[in-house]
Amino acid sequence: MIYTITLNPAIDLFIDTEKMEPNIVNRTKKYDIQANGKGINVSFILKELNVASTAVGVGNGFTVKYIQDELQRSQIAHYFVESRGITRINVFTRVKKGDKEYKLVNPGPAVELGEQKKLLQYLKAKLGKNDVICISGSFSQGIDPKILIKFAEIAVTKNAKLVIDTSYQEVMDVLKYHPWIIKPNVDEIKSWFKITETLNLKQLAKLGQRLIDQGAQLVLISLGGDGAILVSRDKVFYGNAPKIKVLNTAGAGDSMLGTFIGNLSKHIDTITALKRAIAAGSDAARQEWITDFTTAEELENEIQIEDMTL
Image (cartoon, rainbow, N blue to C red; front, side, top):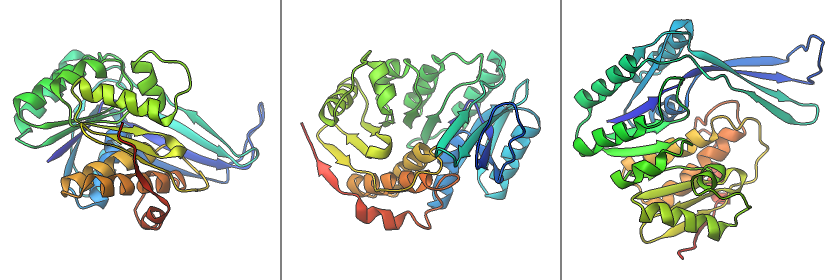
């Protein structure tokens, strides 16, 4: 079983409008409401791939009820610890005039220690050998990023696999527990190593290798519109991104990670998994939400995987 962990879920409101002007009523063309949170998105992707998962998180109010209803409608198992405060709503606005995208992301309510402990106890009880814990996204207020170490300790104790897709510096403290997959973007990996200058592909690959040397098993570096780099103990691969018209980037990284995990879980080789993951991420970026794979496969022909082993 794959357990996706979302410690700051949200409803995302996507707005499409011709223009955005101050101090007036801006009429929108259309809008869409989606159950969201990076781990939740991964569960939706895994469902599309017919890979079982359980979406785990914390939340409260009508917003988390909507998220649970959407998971139920998609027949995705889920477990949410009830917290205080209302689960957040984020707003993403695509403005056609100037072709701009605005992202307004709220911090989310505070989660108390007792509620965090209940979630950890659930995982201790449920997790089995070769299961996967996938922790994605930001954490609600009150959750210390050091909780990553507790997740890692549970994974090691249960002989399970750990996947991390979050920006916190504490990711570096988890490497000694040998996580299965780490998925940083360029800004995150530079932040972890205290680097400010622009880096080329080879320099990014070397940073990925440093994460491997410190304990990670696979490092998937998201390059946004430039594709992705995959680093393992012995190999480094680069895949370009296909040319698309970007509509909404909010679910692209989750589509990439979910597809990569799902394919590896089906024992697909890593090169094919990487190509499919890049295609899924690119397909999501040209849609209003995560990919549904109906048009993702056509993008694979535009992706070339290059061996750039150092």
